[in-house]
Length: 156
Image 1 (tube, rainbow, N blue to C red):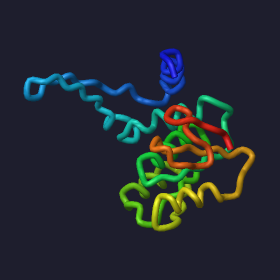
Image 2 (image 1 turned 30 degrees about the horizontal axis):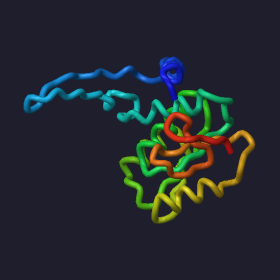
Image 3 (image 1 turned 30 degrees about the vertical axis):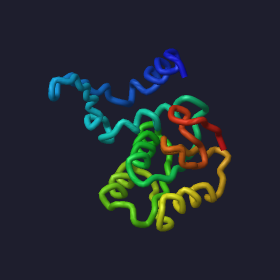
């Protein structure tokens, strides 16, 4: 990834993602830069990667992902902004505060398994749709389609 890739991604997501402020402060005599991503649509930077993944290639007919929270919310929100249906697989013990927001963003929520790994496996095993795409959490955990902005990606 080079500067041109970053610029292209920024241009793609500009109509949908907020440009969040940067504060430069000094703490104990040391400069600190704070990027205030809590001002973003989902309260986290992850909306940027979700939007870029969905806008960078052919538009899928349906988006599928697995998440424990913020990534799922970002994918659900990005899908809603783009007019796409989304399904988010989460582990059964996922916090209600996260799952409620995923559903409020318009995604179908599927609780499966006791861990993220089990939810991710269920997303991978979900019936394949020729028009489906999914995203990967930046940690490198597998989902049917991975986010091109944060890891090597492959379409299903």
